[in-house]
Length: 88
Image (cartoon, rainbow, N blue to C red):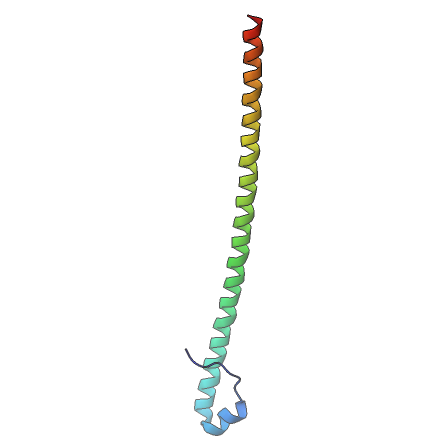
């Protein structure tokens, strides 16, 4: 991976011809645009991951509540069955 550091435009102009410097600057700008695009994609992915985690948490809460309701309903059925059996 290339070393990342600040570029001194005057130094580039001194070292290279105008054409070479222009080509280098174009490449730097293209790389910067690619970096910005990548950063946007990362942010979009982070948002999507947070949304998915939120949906999972809601689903877990719903399942837990349904489980608790099922347990409560089963207890009610057992009590009703016991009462019915006592009445016989």
